[in-house]
Length: 359
Image (cartoon, rainbow, N blue to C red; front, side, top):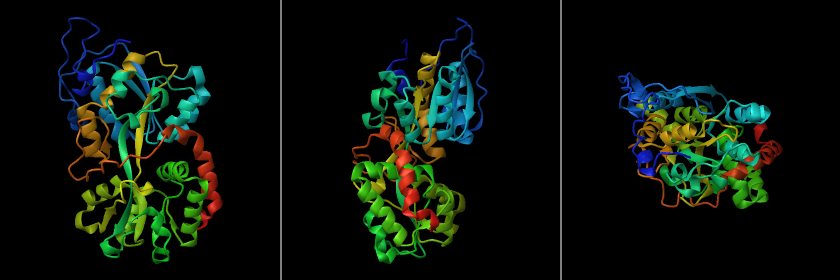
């Protein structure tokens, strides 16, 4: 496989030589967010086209894809959708699938595809761009960004001294009826699946049942939870870290909520990755590696963290200034995200059997 060297990947994938040999690059015409990802001249268009199934939103991902097209001359066709739906679509399509790259906001979806034998092994020049903890089994996928689980709280209702030390403490009667949980949301289900893998089903299910007994409140998803906490409808909410930073950035002092991070070794502070892989049926393996490597380049990683306020995973790229540093062992759990692909069904069963959805 003829891939760029690691140094070129870290530098943002230096401008590719045109397939037309000797042709001058066209002038750079990128604007807006795409121009912050890549600021060089656009390469002459090639005849190569790759297809990406993206479980991440078009608003977030499209500027990176536009920048990659400009930088490489490779055309990108994108199918946006729910990551679970897209993963199931890949299974149904089998050898007929046009997909070259799969991008997911949930490691559960890539873990599922890896277990189904649908993801190829990634080259070391790409996987070496991140810590080994953020690489799937058999090099089947690589993490792109990180999202930490936190407890968001209303600053008008909750004193800092009353914050729990651990997510396990939320079952205490003093938090009765005060904690919102987006129990059907994918990120909560991913977290709970890892919780089960770490502590065992009895402990995880027991915690959830205790939360039900403590009148935990069910919400639809992370952002409405953060909004409601900011308005004072709930005192606390279990969410991904970046939603509160985004709301605070948009609303300023009107938003009355802060994130509380549990200790770095507490399961409540788990860092969950977004991830990408290449399908085993891809006819454009080299070009797909280039795209994933581009997502891990300094320009793309800086865009992701400054736009969505997630944590960059590529070595040497700093998180957005507003983000607190993760603890040295913030991701130091014995986590195999591939297991999420097999564990989500059992997670859903436990959630449904707990009675939390009736709260």
